[in-house]
Length: 253
Image (cartoon, rainbow, N blue to C red; front, side, top):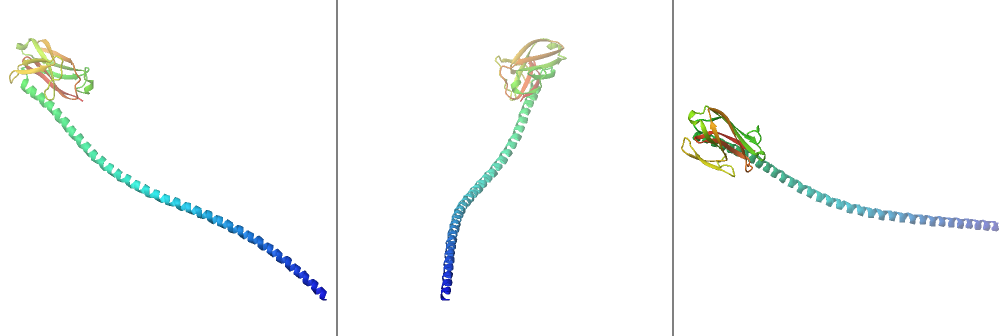
């Protein structure tokens, strides 16, 4: 019986040792797995920490960019407001200048008309031209024309019911001035004296024509400009030896 118990004890001890070794093997395997998991966790944590650091750096850069953009937008908005105010001011000045220019143009036109009326009142002859017309450039052009297109000036008129004492040979003169009464440029200006209600009158003409007057006739002058005229208002007048026959103002734009 003692031998049987001893054999059983040895078998049990052997089983325990085998089981113990098996447990130790499992423990070692588990410890290795735990070490691997710990290493993996540390790697993940390290990677996460690096990514978090990079994200924080990017976030700070974005915040700085936001501040810079906000500053730039504020500066641009301020500049735009200033430019808007300046544009409004310049627009107001431009409208004011346009109004002044319109007023001045009207005044200059009035000067030419006043000069025309003054010449008619103070220098008229005892007989007058009718159907007085000024044409600029080609025949049929209006009395208002662009200055650069003006190459010649034609003045046409009728002399009707001419007194008998003025029939026969006469000299007629074409005189063209600006709105201030200054004669336009001519390579061969003609200076002469004509009679007028206020007394003898010195005139400077650009063209003279010898005619033989009867009771009724249709006459015209065509004068080719020696120099291009500037834009503005002008006055064309026709004189004979006994004063003014007709006068009319015209404008070049």
